[in-house]
Image (cartoon, rainbow, N blue to C red; front, side):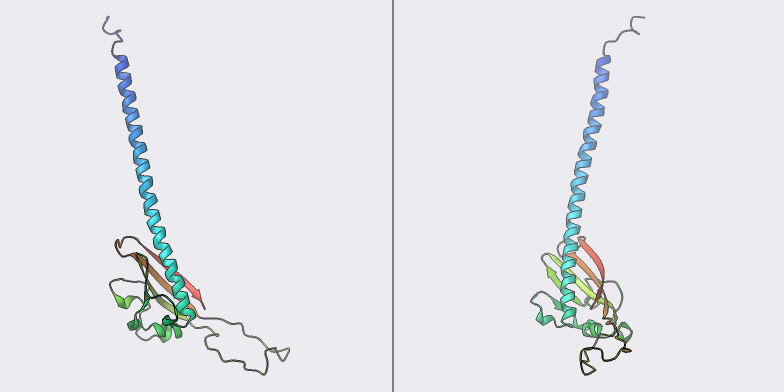
Length: 189
């Protein structure tokens, strides 16, 4: 009967249980901190790839504003892929593209799948026009009347509807191709 009521060693068992609980809590905290730093690094790399894409988009806007004259842009690393019919994609609607690629996919290993390539730091940005819709302000015809003011009360002024371009952008790290971002842009010019 004395052995059943003996409490010797109870504290040792209790301390061992507390140590196991503390060990699991510490391991869980270390796991959460390491996972958070991993996710933070992934987010940083993704944001950098997105910023490279945004730089490529701005460059594409400049090219479209200059109607495809890449030589007027002071970026030395921009390469135009002449085999994709880039000039035709800028100046003609998609329905008039005969045999030109209008898919949404860009394959960095296939030069025929993108129109422009730009190096932004360690990132390579691939851009392509996948759709062009021509509006009524495509060609400048000058003044059709004698002045710049409406001559009659019944004259209807046609609002300007510009070109609409669908642009696909892929930015990819040249060292680690897993660091990349894809963006689709609808641009009105």
